[in-house]
Structures are given as C-alpha cells and as structure tokens.
Amino acid sequence: MQRTLIRDLGANVGKKVCISGWVNVRRDHGKMVFFDFRDRSGFVQGVVLPGSMAMEVAKDTRNEYVVRVEGTVNRRPEKNIQADYQNGDIELEIHAIEILNPSDAMPFDILGNTSGIDEAVRAEYRYLDLRSKRMQKNMRIRSEFVRRCREYLFSKDFVEIETPLLTESTPEGSRDFVVPSRLHPGKFYALPQSPQQYKQLLMTAGFEQYFQIARAIRDEDLRADRGFEHTQLDLEMSFITRDEVMAAIEDMVTTVIESMGYTIKEKPFPRISYKDAMEKYGADKFDLRTPEEKEKGILAYAWVVDFPFFEKDDEGKWTFTHNPFSMPIPEHLDWLMRGEHIGDIYATQYDLVCNGFETGGGSIRAHKPEILEAVYRILGFSTDELTERVGHMLKAFRYGTPPHGGIALGIEGSVMNLTGETMLREVQAFPMTRGGQTAVMKAPKSLTDKQLKELGLKIEKK
Image (cartoon, rainbow, N blue to C red; front, side, top):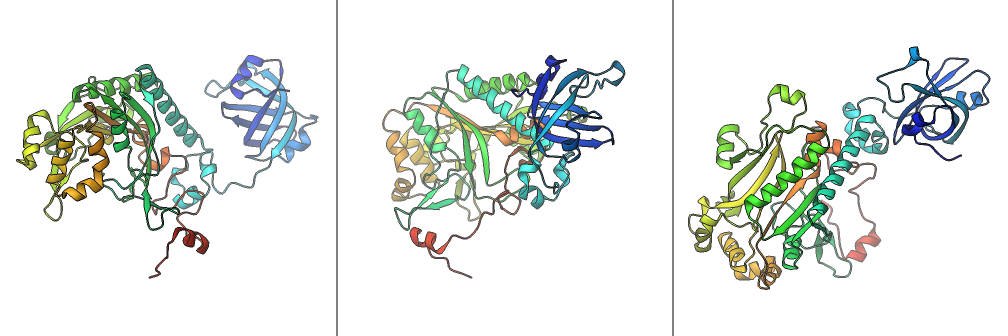
C-alpha cells in the first residue's frame, strides 16, 4: 500500500491507508493502546483496539520508534473532536504496525522546548534536538524565507552564481580560516569571509544582477548572535545608486516578509544617520518597537546611513570601518582622492537593522582602480603591498567595470527576527558551540602524522 502523508488523512475518511513516521507519544490503557504519530507533514492520533492483530507489536513499541502503520481513517464522534489539535476530528484505527527501526531512550526530552538543555548535550545529539517542534519550525521558516527571496530575485532578472570556498586571504576585517595546500607546500588557501571581491568581478564580467546564498566563514570571537560560520543572501547590481539599492532591497524584504504573514511596523523603512543613531540609541543597532509591538511579533526595519569611511586603530593608524572596497559619498570623493579630511569622509555604506539586530549591510563599491588605490594609500599600503593584496582587482577595474553596489543580508539574523530567537545556534541546523566545537562531530581535532607529512606541516607542542 502506498504511503499517505499525515496531513492528507482528512481526505481519506473511511479508507484504509498506510502512514510512515515516528511514534511521538504512546499511551497504554491496558485493553487499548493510543499513539500520536508524526511525519514531516504533521501529527495524528491512532488507536489499537482490543483484539486487534496489531496489539502484540503495539505493546513493544515505544516513543521515537520509526514505524509503518496500516489502518482505517475514522471520523471522531462530535464529543471527542479536539478543535485545537491537528487532525483533531479524525483518528486512525490501527490494523498493523511494522517497526522499521527501534530507538534507544532519548538523552533528553524532545517533546518540549529544548533551549534549556545543556549546550554540549544538545550539540552532541543535535539530530535529536532538531526533531523537537520548535527546531523543526525554525528550520522550516528558514527554508521558506530563503525560497521566497530566491523566487523574488529570479522574478527581477537576477542570476544565481556560486563563488569559490577556497580563495586567498582578503582584507575584510576579521581573521581568516586557512587551509594548507598539499600541491603547494607552505602555501595556504583562505576560506571566504564573504564573496566581496568575486561579486565585484562578476560585475566586471557583465552579470549585471547576481545573487547567491553564500557561506561566510570568519575566525572571530563567538557570541550569541555570531559564529564562525553564517549564511548570507549576497547580491550585487550594476548601474545603480545607493538609493536604488536600498529601494530594491526594501521591496524584496517587504514582499517576502509580508507574504510569510508577518507585519512590518513602518514603510518605507525609516532612515537614520550613523551619528544620530549613536547619539539617540548608543549603537548602530536598535529596536524601534513598543512593548506591545514586541509581544505581537511586529518587525521594525530601519536603514542606517552616512557611516564614517575611516577610523583610527589602536596604533593611531587609519583603518576602514566596514571594508575598503566602498565608494565615498559623491560629495567626499575629492577628499578621498587627495587624502584630505580623512576622518570626515562618509562611505556609501547602508546597514539594515531590525528589532535590535543588524540584518544586512552593503555599499556602492569602488569601480575604478584609482579610487581603490586612494583608499589603500590612506591605509598606509605601499605600491608593492597594494599589488600583493588587490592587484587582481586593480587589473580587472581597467577593463570596463561598471558602477555597482550591493548588500549581504544575514540569513540567521533574518530568521532570528522571524522566530523571536536570540541565539544564532537556534536557527542553524548544526551550529558551533560557544567553545568553537562542531555539533555531533569532534572538530577541531588533531591530524594524523601521515596527513601532516602530506601537507608539509609540523606541530610545535607548547
């Protein structure tokens, strides 16, 4: 008999069906055994009646067993209908149960909210944690958000293009994770902090509207809303201004979020300068909702603009505030080219914030070699250092690179806003722990002597 999904049982009243899934709850009443079964589509109650051929197996079946069940879909009597329960008006009269795979006792209760369970235990058994109703919901919301963004961008003539995961170290503000090369002993790849340079090169290549769902990997300090790995909706557009990028992203976010049933506090999104945000809120991330709006799950988006391009580092040298590939605002381009009023130069940077989290950030990019060279002069790079760092970009910009700009929207940050979660790991399938350990698997760990020899590496023990 062909499998029927639980969500479709209501259309099969009076018919014999077969379902496959997990035992969510088992209740043994002696002469009768009740089950709640679940599959990817939902839940349904089943019952083994006295004298049923399924009774012997039912007595040996426990929670989280994977089963195949045959039975008849019956309408519940009016007095037994559970209006607040999925499939609360039907019940499966069980004729046969086949145990496809038994289960050991759960290391923790997955029927409730697992957020209070010890982090290390949740990480070790993440595949069980993901069975919980809350985590299933979070992963499905994440999937739906990404799908709707994709569909929107395809409808606007964007092209999805993947960029490499093995690249070279780039100056983007965080430490790189590096990968040793076996074919080139003593040399290393870097994992991408973002696809920043590749997406600009795609603009040079003539793909005027690009996007990808990109992995970004950064060796930075871990906290509740930051991990070694995150995913971003990365996009770039040619022949576009700052206001046009912001308008395009605002339309996408509004279309996607409202189609998912959420309410946005204010449209168009308010705009506030970095200076005003710091003076009013003490940070460039802020929450514009009232307590009542927070309770209702309303989303308050806002743009932060007019960021300083440069700031002094701990050694008193100029460094960039976001990334060195941005354009200054048009009024400050001459200052940049002459290296004057450096601390007063504004970048064409725009950050999207929502409910106290940074949701995305981008800018109009430098597209001429002399502009990028001017930025690196301010940063104190010599000609040789500049060529070593971004010589490939300077070369590309000499072959007709169009004006362009874009943004990266954090998938995790967006989903945290939609679900009300405050921890990054609650919206990732297999997140790192706060100690930088992988979920389920045991990384980082040592390499074998054979691996080290192949890579030309030697470990110095302290």
